[in-house]
Length: 262
Ligand code: GCO
Image 1 (cartoon, protein in one colour):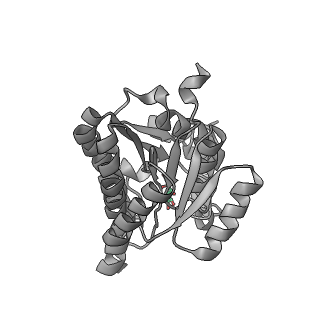
Image 2: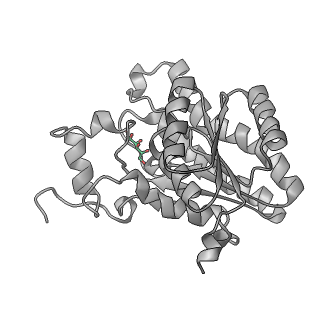
């Protein structure tokens, strides 16, 4: 059975893999045997990240490119395919968030979030997908969010993008499943990362709210995603198409409870 989850001989490209959930998921794929190709846009962060991956004995190389730039993505993907080898697994994880109420949000801010969180997964998937379709094999995993299902004050652009990403996932699965390409998504709940640090401060009302709102009674640890990403990247999910797996400690399963109820 464990062979089903074995990623030896597979190459995985992870966008936004220099920190946070992207790094945790990449490490999970690496520990299952995959060769890692880490995308990022900051040289400094990439250097630190590569050192960390190598310290953990993982087979890793870097791919610095701007995921929102169509021509740059095409050139980078073709270069990876030529110089490193076929991309078997693509993880569209790179993402940004801007917490601004609608009435105070500039259209430029809105567009920037949509560009990174929704348009970029389309761009990267299109250029990697072209090679996967030719090879009649591939795995694509889009990192969605609670905001693919739920609204929240101040994160409108992010929610619009993550809602769109859920449907982009289903539509890519519709078009590419016949080419033996499985396209699925993961919806992380509330995880302890740099991105959530501002709302996870002790005493911050949102911190208490999440701990109370999550049946598991805690924030997620990035490593909590490793098992799910290996499942969706491996032969164990060869007949799983267009699904979003929510790894959220039960948030979406419940209406929640009053804070004084145990
Ligand atoms: C927020 C958070 C969320 C989480 C995650 C939840 O401000 O609500 O940052 O966006 O990071 O996406 O699934």
